[in-house]
Length: 135
Image 1: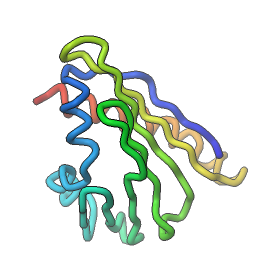
Image 2 (image 1 turned 90 degrees about the horizontal axis):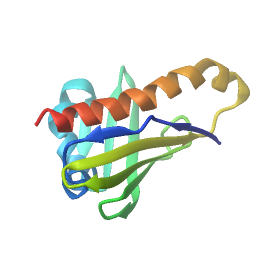
Image 3 (image 1 turned 60 degrees about the vertical axis):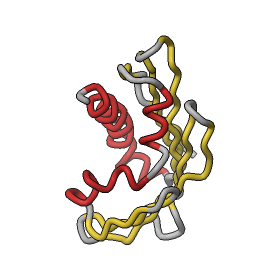
């Protein structure tokens, strides 16, 4: 498995508040319905189609309150992957977050997608931070 880690981003919220939002897929419904087809969400899992492909599913496989949320794809996902979001509250209303993705890629896919995955984990971390910092 290849590991991709985002840069550490700062969020001006308590780790507890961030964790509560990110650890329940139902909280993503307003945004996901605009960008994904056939979005369905429960607390621990979601499924969707993207650009005519899918359906794909993602599940939360582990939670460590206010610190870590771990995700994986279901059997329909084309590549086996694990993703986790780590939170560290360094002061009240000052939480640091990092996104890590481990994905199983053959050499050809790694050459084709490696750079995009690197950029993608940073974009994901920055987008999550921007969303929380704007509310």
